[in-house]
Image 1 (cartoon, rainbow, N blue to C red):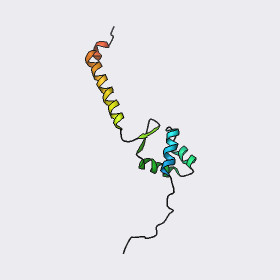
Image 2 (image 1 turned 60 degrees about the vertical axis):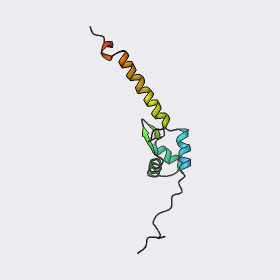
Image 3 (image 1 turned 60 degrees about the horizontal axis):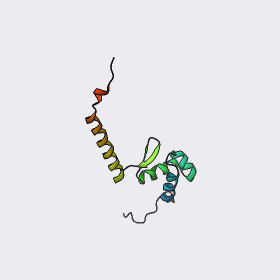
Image 4 (image 1 turned 180 degrees about the vertical axis):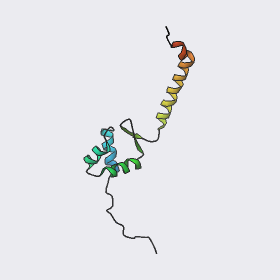
Length: 98
């Protein structure tokens, strides 16, 4: 028994990931339902292709799942700044009591 070139059920997908990327660039706050309606496809197809593109929904915005080098540098800068503030002015010294 061979599996080469066996006919398969279903239609081949003609979904274009570049169009999905363009739609997300226009408005990354769209729901999968809204995107599906706009692209005239099913919501499950949109979800599957968003996952394939490495996108996740964070606080209502579709963003890349992996951090870019710029994102990593920004996070490092922020944590360094916050840590230095705590060392200079400890939190408990700022609490006002009666």
